[in-house]
Length: 159
Image 1 (spheres, helix red, strand yellow):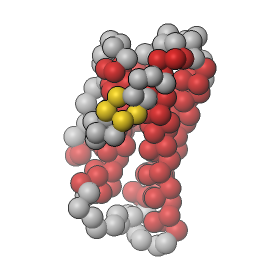
Image 2 (tube, rainbow, N blue to C red; image 1 turned 120 degrees about the vertical axis):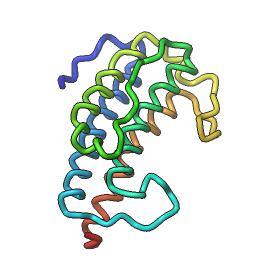
Image 3 (tube, rainbow, N blue to C red; image 1 turned 90 degrees about the horizontal axis):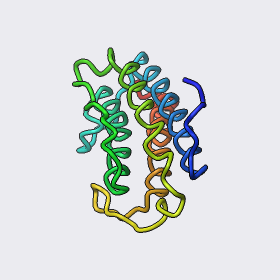
């Protein structure tokens, strides 16, 4: 996928969209390496760590959710991002689904003026308040954090 995006009213949003795309791809690469190594995820009550497939679905689904939330609070059209594939299909459909999500991320925020990214704050689905710019940064960091966790687990020999 090229870095060619539509013209953006706010260059910071364009940068975050491109960084999100890059880091989602890097996460998927790390996930595949962890999966191929048979990496054991830590035991936790967090359903996102119930299996490697659940973790993949969590990260892909979060990317969908962040853009849907941003469009909702900015009163933009629904970005029409399909739901995440079922866990029994997530590995096989990961490339196709990621391409779909990343394509859906490219245009919705393009014409939003910079000021709307900062004010007002809105409650996230988990009840923390974010301005849209902060949610974009959160969306970029999410796959980075999970990639870091996978890499650390692989280094520790958790497989």
